[in-house]
Image 1 (cartoon, rainbow, N blue to C red):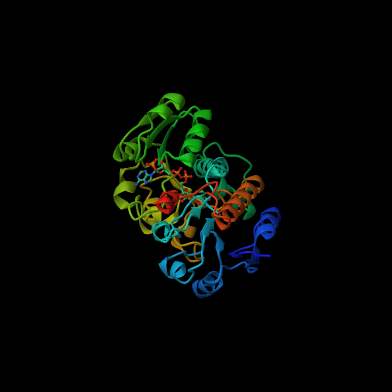
Image 2: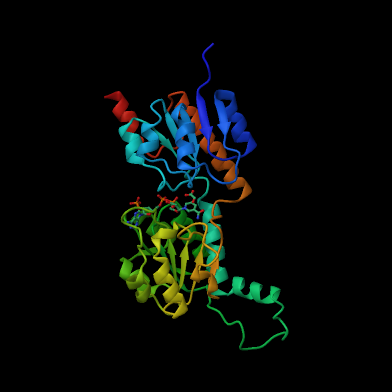
Length: 331
Ligand code: NAP
Ligand code: GLV
């Protein structure tokens, strides 16, 4: 009987997904809350045929070189900025990822942050818990920004950006977008207007970021862009922290170039306790929980497990970020 292929799973995942992998592989699951260090990760993957990673694991050329038997990298996420996908392709290794099962959950969090920042929910909750709610009601206190019938600007109209736009439609918002690829069919279906980035920044009451982190999108929103936004505007980032220049964002919020921000992602993560952003009332931050609903995470874990098993068995992955590896194999 052939020995089962060895796989390393870099963090505990849903039991059902572990059970599926267990049926097909000799599996080691990293038991700690903290991720394995790069050295340990390299050591663990060196003799493995498969690895199931998440956004905290760096899958770089060094790791790929250390693992000559690796047949598949399965990432438990949609974002792949921690994975050298081109390096994997060059080595003929398919990279799995998890689109299609988390966009709605992530947009739910994006919209929750949008509403919380606009209507000052995080700030007012902290105030109540602080024992400061001593005057029952005052007509001039806690005034925030309306959401309904305002303009929502989507930057990056992919799966999550579109879900965000759909939520905006439910609030009777005007939806404008800027994205690398114009999507006329979606414009017609959802009543979206394509604009260039400067127009979006100038016209949107809410600027919501949904681009992947790449060399092009690092600090996509910096001082110049923040200065183009309305002083009443709210910035939402559920993409990746470094898409925004945090130092510029701090100044923009402090000096009220913009009204508020809602962030599910920060730079770095976790945000240090002494980060100046945490001193500001007009920012609400969640700890990278976009896809963290029970159902979505369950679906992500199962998809990542299926991708891993398919790669071990030499079958095409359900969701592959570099399908060109299969073309290369035919050559
Ligand atoms: P997606 O479907 O690939 O959408 C990304 C969109 O951004 C695409 O429309 C893409 O254009 C566009 N884009 C790429 N580079 C651009 C650029 N330089 N300028 C303008 N537009 C650009 O991805 P998604 O599933 O919506 O996810 C987006 C990102 O969200 C992920 O990469 C990840 O970093 C982040 N995310 C965060 C969480 C969380 O928990 N907070 C959860 C999931 C994902 P094309 O159509 O031309 O490709
Ligand atoms: C989460 O951040 C993801 O990219 O899926």
